[in-house]
Length: 112
Image (tube, rainbow, N blue to C red):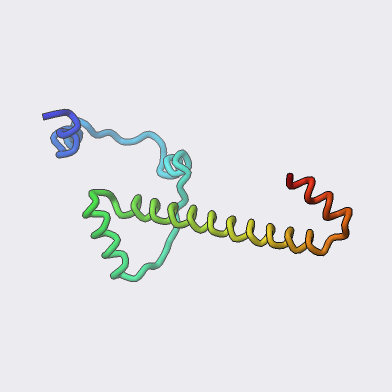
């Protein structure tokens, strides 16, 4: 059996011989990891479902929720930026269509 398997099944690392009090406070650990303690109210069934999903994947539910929120936030930020870019491009097209001839020529040269 490999060391990885022994760690995974708990044969290694789960005895009192392998424990020690961590130096530093929880606040220092959170700061080092860039974490912020928050309080949030969730429906009991939602929390239960999230815990079941995390358990199925063999991970803690809090790290899973952090990952879920990170992925959602990144996706939404990209969506917002793309929408904003389209708005700017549309405004730019509208401006170039209503521009006088010298301004139109200047803008066309800039785009080339």
